[in-house]
Amino acid sequence: MSFARQPGIARPESLNRTRLLAGAAAVALTVGGLTACSDTAQPASIVLKTEGDSVELASPEDAGAATAAASELAFESSDIAVVGNEDDAGAVAEKSLDLEAPGLIVGEDDVATADELERLGVTAVFVPEGQKEFEAIADLDVITYDPESLEVQEGEAPEEITRDGGAAAATLFVTSTEGPTPGQEVASATIEAASGNVAELPDGDPRATSETVEAAKASDGGGVLALGEDFGDPDTFTARLATARTAPELPGGGQIAFPGRRMVAAYGSPNIPELGVLGEQDLDESVDLVKELAAEYEDYSDEPVIPAMEIITTVASSEAGPDGNYSTELSHDTLKPWIDRAGEEGIYVVLDLQPGTSTFLEQAQMYEDLLKEPHVGLALDSEWRLEEGQRHMAQIGSVDAAEVNETADWLAELTAENDLPQKVFVMHQFSMSMITDRQDLDTSHEELAMILHADGHGTPDLKMGTWNALQEGLPKGIGMAWKNFYDEDSPTFTPEQTMDVEPKPWFVSYQ
Image 1 (tube, rainbow, N blue to C red):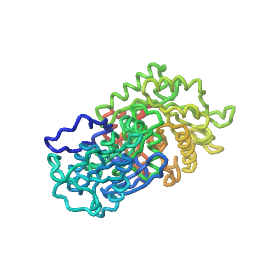
Image 2: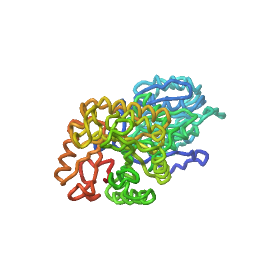
Image 3: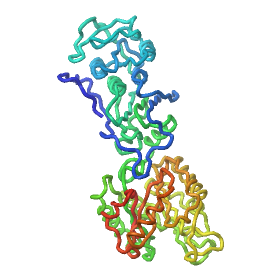
Image 4: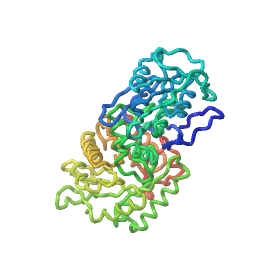
């Protein structure tokens, strides 16, 4: 975010602070049914978090409270301050930077301003020429300055000025869809005047991109003020900030799977060509394949397209097997080389479960160590979830929302406890009976990016019929994924046709 400077005013070299810019344009939080921000998000909030202090909230539209919060964060004390009203926010910000002093906006009442002036120990204030008198500065020396040239017009500045910015640099996170408010503009100047940093979080989430993660890491050890829209409640924002500071990034950057990227995957199981294209070649060739598939989609996506592998990790079986669950579990030794190589190549991996009569949670827990990898997510293939007495190919399997939620709870907890980025959590479905009680699916886990994978195949009309039907009644917060079949589709959609469906899928796989 850039803040307009008065024409003809050069900023002194000593004030060229480092600004961490995390993006130049605001982005929508809800795209194609996938919500990047939790339902706890508030439309506007200030979050003040300093070392050892509790988190406080105020409205960013209250410029007095906003600028007082920034001043409190950045300065321990100051003999001087710059004070003005919202109409002169630009001049107040300029003079604050010029003097390396706190800037304060007087809002509807001047209580916040008066309290902050007293806390700082201010004896003299700089006020733009032509300003009305403020009760908050009635007992202080007043120096007026030209808002264009910043030159003093009346009054005399103190010969010696003492300012204490504290031991650690502060960071201001800002977000706005329509440019800076007066409070943001002056608060930013105050933070920079104290050698702090200003970083823009266009969607209010420090996990969003590599740039926002970098800004979050740089803020560690100093106070933080988040000023703008959609930062969420205090617990939400502080949890996101902690994740951004500690978790590794996903392939393609950032720690949120969507909406910052789309994924294109090959589906199958290593060395089993009958199960899908992923198993039709060795590991080296599979790496090349998924990269080529992703590249074919780049011209049809505004977001980066990341290559992926959806690996059938537990394979539905016609035989009960030693454990009697009609599912064959691949060994860690089989999967680990694929997962390690994918991590080296910037490829995301989804472990697909076909559990037979086991529960999804029981099988997911078998692969806990692999799911601790930052680039590994989980898919529940409900077609292959059997009840006792059922058999694969005799019935279409199904799972209820309670079992999906139980698995999601566990995966979210695993993600949080191990300081991991958000995990892709896939639910496969082509018939409404495959996931029962869908209205009860819990979409509240910020640790998970939940997507519904439409598995329908056949003619374009049949595929679109399935695609549209599956979206009816789908809980908010679940995005859509699409599958292309090389043999069963007639014809197979091209990348352009695939990305032309509505909503545009976040995840596309090939079988």
